[in-house]
Amino acid sequence: MTATDQAALVTIPLLIDGRDVVGPITEVRNPARLTEAVGGYSTGDRASVDAAVAAAEAAFPGWAARPAQDRAAALTLTADLIDADLANLSTLLTREHGKILADATAEIANTARTLRYYAGLAEYASRETISQDYRGRIVERRAAMGVVAVIVPWNYPVLLATLMIAPALVAGNTVVVKLPDNSPLALAVVLRRLAAAVEPGVVNIVAGSGHEVGAALTTHPRVRKVSFTGSTATGRAIMRDASVNLKNLSLELGGNDPAIVLESATVTTHLVDELVRGAFTSTGQVCYAPKRLYVQRNLFEEFTEAFTAATNALVVGEGLNPAVRMGPVNNGQQHRTVIDLIETSRSEGAHVAEVGEYLDASPEDGYFIRPTVVTGLRQKSPLVQQEQFGPVVPILAFDTEDEAIALANDSEYGLAASVWSDDVEHAFDVGRRIQAGSVFVNIHRVGASDPSMPFGGFKQSGIGRGHGEIAVDEATEVQILADRIDMHTNPTQTKKAQP
Image (cartoon, rainbow, N blue to C red; front, side, top):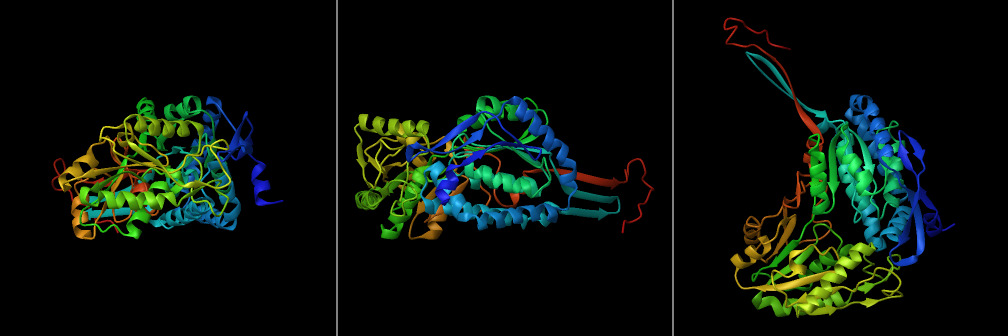
């Protein structure tokens, strides 16, 4: 049986307290071949959420009491299992998501690396800081919160889930993970391996509609924290729901990420290829991809011509074909959103260049859109103001550096941005004036941010920070233990120093 045949048989039940729970099955289809079923997953309801939270709460005291190194060992074991099954997991992810096999393989491989990174923070997660003076001792430590709900997006489901789950687990929390409605299968396979490496109830898997299952998690009184990556609109709804019982929140939300090409940049093949790679990797469905390009007017014509020519070299088709460089959009709703933005741009009189070529594929087969470059738009045009999350990129000219910074900041989003210049120090100075959580210099693509770098957004792009050590901090509460003398009521009392 081939890897493809094996993937076609994947059917995922819920996992609650270490036991499979079978519910109504939702079918998953290949977005490159809509007639082809990839597998299916069980969906649950509020009762499923109640059972999963109860299991996670029951498992919490024992898991939190385990030495952090033991918790880390479960992450490392899971990473080993992922590496051993890299080819099958990557094929499954490509078939359910649509991204090309190279991108799916990178996502799965980086998932294993992320698990190992957080396993390496076990000592950090269990640290205590002790201060001592004549009044006594103060111990500052990090305490696990309890049950953490993790709500996963569909664009990088395995990696982004891991970036939320791994710090929560190494810090001593237990988790209930809601699978994305699209692209749930490879993630579920990985989660089940992680669940098998820990005690029952530490990792639980639920699925179902955001309206029922998602809301049940975000309003549940025994869930202490919600970690969510996804749209700003959904993030607002989660924040509203979580306010009912004052949950902790980590929200990584939408981005409309600008790239600024300064006059001091040279329009090289490398610069252009880097921005093409950034804009069209995973068919543009990357939270911090460059989504609007601002180019100094003296370079505008040269850059636009080179960028369009490089984009025209992209081959579009099914992601398992090694000659293909860009797959379909993941789902019908997102496909309609992107098509609407392209059509609106046309109606505004913009120049819309649909480039690239299909290979053994057509829009009738799946959710395909050719890579599209748009010029002649106003700053207030929908394609410039909204997050397109697809393979269409507007390019706009600017005259002065101050104008470029103002245009970049003219957005309610502030996730990421980039500055391109031959003068790196000056680019850093410009970056300091941009309202974004991450500003990259002469790079802006998947890989520009790694698991050790704090990541999150300004403004409507989120609350809190993930990745790095700060993700462990945000999965814990600060606790103070103090043995102190009140010198006002006991002015003559002395305190024997603690050993």
